[in-house]
Image 1 (cartoon, rainbow, N blue to C red):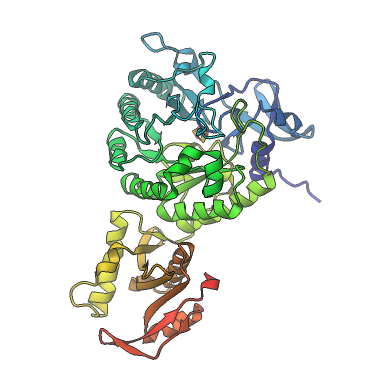
Image 2: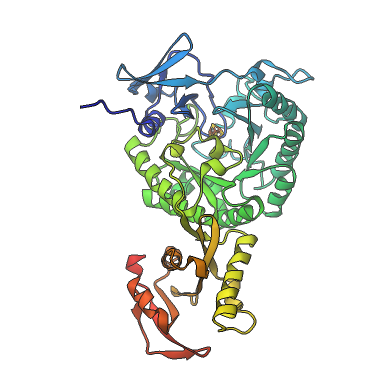
Length: 510
Ligand code: SF4
């Protein structure tokens, strides 16, 4: 009987929940706006940030032994596998022309990401409304960093790190500057300066701004990707753990994500989902589904209790639970065609604070999601025109109507190409939704795209409170819908010169 190979996904998950005992200095982060506290190693070829200094780490079965440049991971004192150490970047010893130490401006995150909190203060820090898991102002004590980083200084640091330390992308984050979005002007100046000086891919993180035009301003300034982090999809838990974010309301996040995907593109917008805040698993997966269908990457991260933060004594989530969540989230990403490897910059590209990348699968060849930007909506409408106007002649010139402006439009993509569409919308305030305009290109009709679109349309409506889902089905397609579990609800009737029947979906199967 052979000895089982160590499973990097499992080990990464446990390390982030249990911590790593280290005798050497891993160039740790002690505070900051993200999941700070810890150091980074390279496990299975991926950078992984792990807790090293919190009190619970003393009970971890994992420890790191390093000798002569080689590092080995041990579990309960037994050697498990070699791991990589991330070389200390040279920029930490450099200064700007004006004498400012680079290390006060930015840090290396993961293996190749330069990260800076450009405004290291938060309007909610001293009030009772700050995020309980955040440690943004902790690193200001002791002079380790500056409250405000200036664009020209950051640009110098980024250019040097790109040229000498193998940095390939930059994360610029901030605390809340007051009104949501007030931090945009400074973020935009920093993004522009960094881009001009280094040509690195730039990621910016902000709270949902009042005016989505701010997103276009950031894009024009050189930002390639954006993070708009809700942290938790459960309203009550969010209100408890991050009251200022909760006060913005879920709708504000959804609208900003939509607008951001329009500007930055599908898969180039991210939101953290923190596990371990007390949220039910279903809410976390509901949030992940909602984001992924819009083209927002749900970045699942286990709570990292930062010493000094209001959640310093909260334990990180159980690794069993994290493994389950990662598996489920990986399936959601594959079904929506999202991949971290396609993200240009930011936490999703770095990935060090999450074990998600260890679980990711290849996207399925056939995926379905909402039409996420103007281009995808235009393609969906072209397919409808081809089917209902050119092929079937049901409409003379165009099949567009008033319902299109309020409908959710879904598309099916086969091997990356949009091949079909369907729309769904509520007809009353009592939970009745209608589906329609199901259209699939002739060349893709054997692919299963129609079945997938119908199922996803019903599911999309159901998560938005649908209690009854109906559609007018052309007589030759009744059997197809019966096979999907739909019920016939009327005798045939004429609609635009063709026999149709009213049918309803089985919501229990959605
Ligand atoms: S995932 Fe984000 S916060 Fe974490 S180390 Fe990478 S860049 Fe920093």
